[in-house]
Length: 208
Image (cartoon, rainbow, N blue to C red):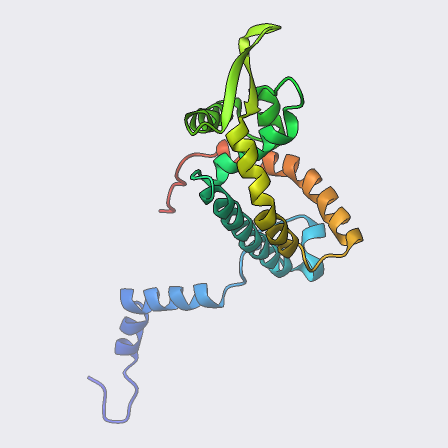
């Protein structure tokens, strides 16, 4: 037992090796550790930091959410979802005089044919799209917007145009063209990223 005023080295050593002290030290080390970088490409790391990349992703997600909200609002006026509305307006733009196939719509929307078929079934049920057999290939169908669907799309313009204008109100003509070009190039990059994440195990194993 130590004399009054004399340091208790044994007790101090026991405290240093206690599980509580070790756990507290580990938490402190985690808090003071250098943040893990989320990218490695130098082009995405000005000044060696990923801060701008992370901000860009968050801004992109915020804007995408607002675009989806507007699309959902358009769809509500038809009694359909935003995704179904996007499918409908794509058919209207691509159908021409003969109609348009499911595969062409899927390519236009960067989704699978099965996904488009599901949305088309909803539009047919709502009497917004008509489906008929392709005479040149009876295994396929041609899609056209019905008179009801066309009338609803025409009536929507008075709402649609101001909303779409507002979405890109801050951009100049040159900036909008640059953005359009960049988005076209980013879609294949997104496909590559999705393939990578899709090839990973469902859950990462926790460190032991």
